[in-house]
Length: 268
Image 1 (cartoon, helix red, strand yellow):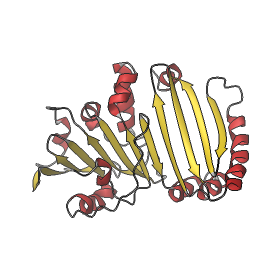
Image 2 (spheres, helix red, strand yellow; image 1 turned 90 degrees about the horizontal axis):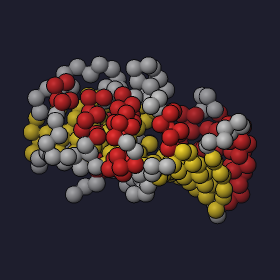
Image 3 (cartoon, helix red, strand yellow; image 1 turned 30 degrees about the vertical axis):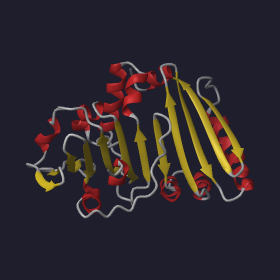
Image 4 (cartoon, one colour; image 1 turned 180 degrees about the vertical axis):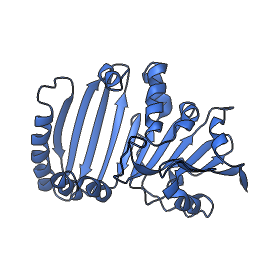
């Protein structure tokens, strides 16, 4: 059986893996549901909150657009995969879609009656009783090629590490940063690859970002520049702990925050 991340078209440069079961177990139920709702509302996909909360793992492929608005604060074209769904979870999202089309192989396709905006879910593929693959309007054609025509080109997926892990296309990230942070954009563009993961428990959240450069000296130069920026950001903040190191040609950024501080940040 193909891994759920392979449902995500290769043109989406950010891929996030979330171990939903681990997140659920690391925080009070009310906080877990709030986190999931805020996450999905940011993409205009709040109708899938119940399905997401009942899943075992989640994958998100995204491409930032820069078109930030109150209605879509994340402003990304995306494909969202909800895998290992709990048996009998309600299809409360289905009311916004036409009747499903049976594609065979236990796959069903749902097309939105009228997507409200660019970032609303426009198509859903359901692998009966197992998985939902949700595409925003701009990603419908690419997702159709992957699922219906079996053109699966994605070879790089987030590693199975931590409660959350991310695979980042550095060229895409550099283009996103360029308008507002040209210096940071240049630094990111020099990395060959970049990935991150987060561990979470009932006391703290720990994050690690690792970026690989061609030369150790290049990683050291980036470390020096980044350390200055982080020192300025941390002035007067004794809660967030961030450390930057270099191992061979890898730049490693590690951070820790108390879980209660995160809850407060979420407004709970």
